[in-house]
Image 1 (cartoon, rainbow, N blue to C red):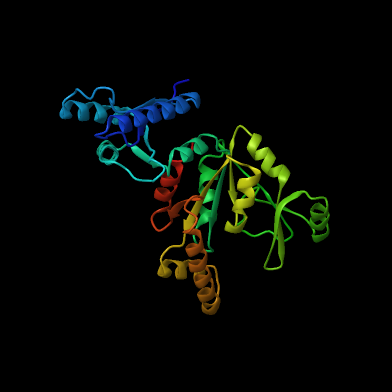
Image 2 (tube, rainbow, N blue to C red):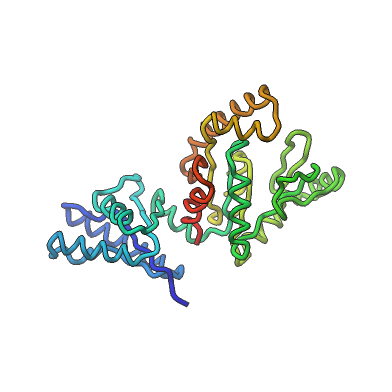
Length: 295
């Protein structure tokens, strides 16, 4: 089975030899991790500093052109150097996908992910995105089911909920089966520890739709196995149209828009937790942006 070719783009250039040597060691470390994970990593000809600039850039461009995607890995400061920006420009010219990480640690967590979570305010489109991914890649992904006491909704995804009585829910809670529970609009919701255990141990990746305030609990329980997207709310005009289509009166819509802004503002402060997705454009384009992060 052929291995996916990925191009590593990380800050390398420096006038100081000690910094350059440190950067090269870092690149070797990243390359080794990717190889162990089943990838075929390539990069710019960093050991050939004697090459003239044009030859160096031509080799770098060729390597980017043969890769399926570029993995951009900044230093822990998050800053990128001119050589990385050049790589990104080359990728746009060649049509190669670019996946940006926050730092080296972020990349290593990505290599071990089993669960992808989607959070967002009402009307952001997170459910629709998850449904589209599950429809298109049903052989690659499972959905982690929630337990709920509410009635079935037409918008529920297949396998998204296990519907139980209120008494059954309380019994499961008494037996400490849940990782977390929530009371939303009179309906009880919960995720069982067993459901997370199954997702972490499965050969297939899993998708979860979760409220933002339980993310830390999930990260602690399934440490190193979770990758999280936050779907930002669209413009107020688009959001107003979406919520009105759901049949809500104007007063309720205004309240939900205010709540959307509050949740988005809170989520933007958690940059170490989320990859932010804006669902303003065509859904297929949004899905393509997300799928860059799928292994």
